[in-house]
Amino acid sequence: MTARTLTVRDLAQIAIFAALIAALGVPGPLSLGVIAVPITLQTLGVMLAGAVLGARKGFFAVLLFLALTAAGLPLLAGGRGGLAWFTTSPSAGYLYGWLLGVLVIGYLTSRLLPKYPFWPALGATVLGGIVMIYAIGVPVTAFTLHLPIWGALVDASKFLPGDAIKAVVTVLVARQVHRAYPGLIPRRRAVTASSATSTPTSTATPTPARASDE
Image 1 (cartoon, rainbow, N blue to C red):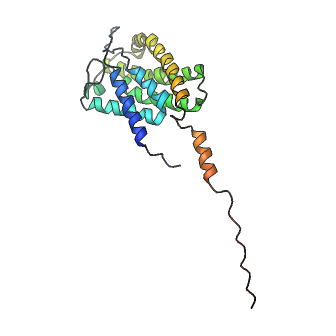
Image 2: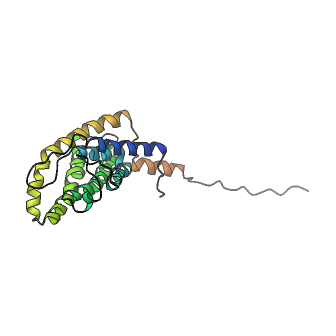
Image 3: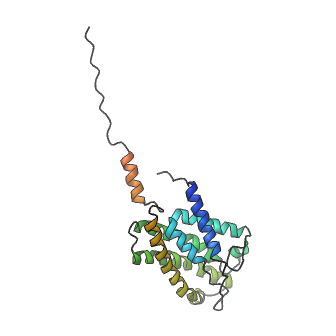
């Protein structure tokens, strides 16, 4: 199986969602709790990237955003940017968790299309957009601040209500998008079926040449 190359349309969608994640950081971060990990709207952009674009394009959209941020552009909420936010910051793990989260959401979403039922879609979004991100973010926060995992996990619970709302919003928006623009996420079974039908199943039996009468 060969990897499908990215088209101009794919690249445009990747750029648009990278810009969306950046735009959701404009309102700025909200700091709650005792650990310096801010609450932002940018996780909503990550969830939408996976649910609308799928695993492949969504991953590249988040990766593009993170690469530009690491290069120094102030794209994180509050105008933050630079390598320090990926190394010594207590929130660094959540940024890496975005990459895993968008992959999980995109992969599971592709399995739910074209119907995309609400509750399974919400479960997929919660698994990728909350569980997977926390699975990386919480241990990194604990390691960076020399805290026990339990303490970092308790403090991270401040994110849960907002992230749950983001997951619901993501599913509602994605349902409308996929209804209006089917085919944004190519389904694996559809690709396999089309490749199978394009493969010749039989070969013509050569007919022996008749000797000419002399």
